[in-house]
Image (cartoon, rainbow, N blue to C red; front, side, top):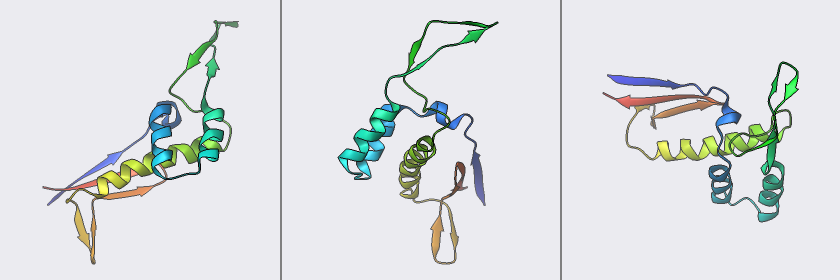
Amino acid sequence: MHNIYLLIFQKAYDSTHRNTLRKCIQEFKIPKKLINMCKTCTQKTRSAVRVEGTFSSFFENNTSLKQGNPLPPILFNLTLQKGIQSIKMLPSGIKIGTEQMNVLAYADDIVLIEKN
C-alpha cells in the first residue's frame, strides 16, 4: 500500500525566494556571468498597489519573480529541480520495472509517493 500526495503550486513565481534561487543556480554550476545576469534581472523589483485609481508608494519586493518575461519560469524550474533531486535521494516510493520511483514531476505538477 502506498500514499500518494499531489503538490499544487499556487502563484509559483510569487513564492520563489530570491536567495534560495541564487543558491540553487550556483549548485547547478551555472557560469558566474549567467548567474550575475539573472541576479540583475531579479533584484530590486519594486511594486505599487492601486486602490480606486490611486497608487501607493513604491516598495521593494524580495520574494517574487517578475511576470511577463521568459526568465522566471526557467528560474522557478531550476529551484524546483533542486527539491526534486533531494526527494529522489529518499529510500521510499514504488518500483516500476527496475526503477524505484518516489517523485513524479511535470512542469510544476509534483506527485510524491510514500510506502505505507
